[in-house]
Image (cartoon, rainbow, N blue to C red; front, top):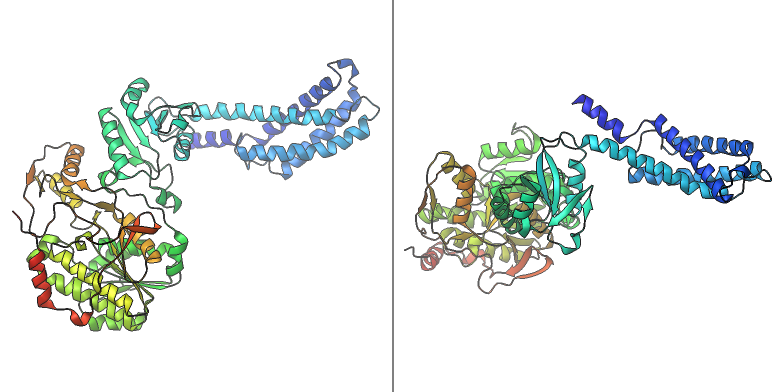
Length: 596
């Protein structure tokens, strides 16, 4: 490996002495060619002594300017655009003293004043051609060997080009690009380092057979789940393994590089919703502020805490009643779980006195309220717990925030709150109304953010299915036609922070989660990936469950004035003095779906 790295370094940046010799010979050939062109190819008209004197001035000038401008100090990759720009500067600089030398030495001695002007572009061309040959020679040695997997690249744009450039100059790469796949007609004749666009994704099976490809790399940073499902199905039919690159937001944030390719996952196929953030607007309300996150040990709360640290918050306050969960998020952020730092707060949102004490001591300026109970079936069995946590707990946090002049309050809601049919949905709907009321009757900017299922959260579908598959147990599906919205936790949290920047007080901001996905399709894909013979069992819809979830309730708008992935809606306000426990339970019973 060390020998390969040494070879690669010498290949990318040719030895300075070699470049000096190449450039010197280039100038000598160019001066001779310039004189021959000027003298109509009559070699006898060349004055040898004067020509040698001028040539010495040119060579010394080339050496001096080449050193001063770093051309001969291994700064640039040989044959790169940066080196070419420097060569232009050096040749131009050399031409000035050389022209005056030619004028002084050659005037009346057989050296026309235009000879060096003719010689300069010729010298540059020879230098450039020599470097190109050098680069091609060494890059061929760096090309992956025969053992590398023959790979097609889906996407001939910038990301695809960079991927090909990387793979073809890495002798240790596991993949060898053999062709591009692209659906854009304008890319039909594109070629990168000899790798051509061979057709569209619909022609994948034929192209794979022609090129003997074994894998497909999807090099589209903003590819969503629907596109990846289509590509995955076509690749599977063609017998190809699928690799994907990180999302564009991960690349732009520096969390990942274009070259960080990996095998496609079930999360990519059902929950990938590429997000483009307005980082400036997010920093505008977070940078330098004291930010409190309730439910910081939960899946959404923990990811929010991790992402908030990237936006320069002045102080992060992580509140939860689960000390082990707080330790886990502390480890993920700080690399230790000592639980001794000020950012850890152990408290329960059901305890208004504890919240009042925390707000008085820590004086947060922005609050993300993520603490909640979330399982539909559990709360159908124990609706009183939904009332205590999701309703009264939210009210406690709102009142503590209002009492201490919080600037921005973001309530994390759920798609179950749109046309609710369950205890979870009704409790979160009330939380949205309480948030809207507080925003209308205080100086706080209070908004709710509503979205559907997130992938990978504790107790959610994917981890549950994975455990059942690992144990060889049947996968339980409520209904063969049941659909749900899905999004990865990082993408959901990015949009939550974005919503906090653009939401007006009293609004409910609804995240675009793409198209709903059939749960049965997810189960079948996961079983196919496992290679096991797993049974599917239908249990029927449970009390309070919907066959198809909704994000936008009846009568709510779907306007997107600021961000293409975020809708703005309004809900009725609810004054806390009108909050009635018995009335809520009556409404819950009246609106619950009867399961058959």
